[in-house]
Image (cartoon, rainbow, N blue to C red; front, side, top):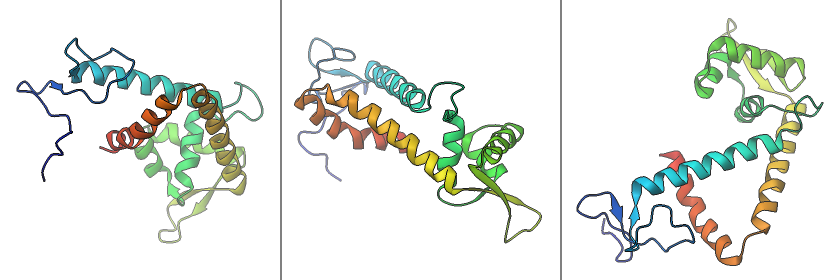
Length: 177
């Protein structure tokens, strides 16, 4: 597969690439307009971490509030939207211990956001399913997250919006790699 003529290419060292369209940020860009991939990686990682943290905690309500849904509980409910799963699979997917997931599932069941069901294929195994209240809670959290992000995007200029629109699929590709 041929590389498009305008695509950035690695230099001999493999650590720098050609100008990728330039941003107002100088992080990772040297005086020649080339991008230092290591510096860019650090800058993108930090920005993504900060955004992720802000989105997770802005949406979850105030700690102790009746509508608060902790980020780890939201993540489990979102996974359950695609169908019931055993606690062991949830623990593996969320990268937590079995006992920790058992506690999380217990709190979701107690709150009426999830339910334990007998596995139709293996009656010895219990699976966890999301309830209608759980689906509503996930939809509410997503709506709050979207409102939060929309408010931040509203403060950007058209060029910055276009840059983010172009970067979003690239960031998704990085996340899925």
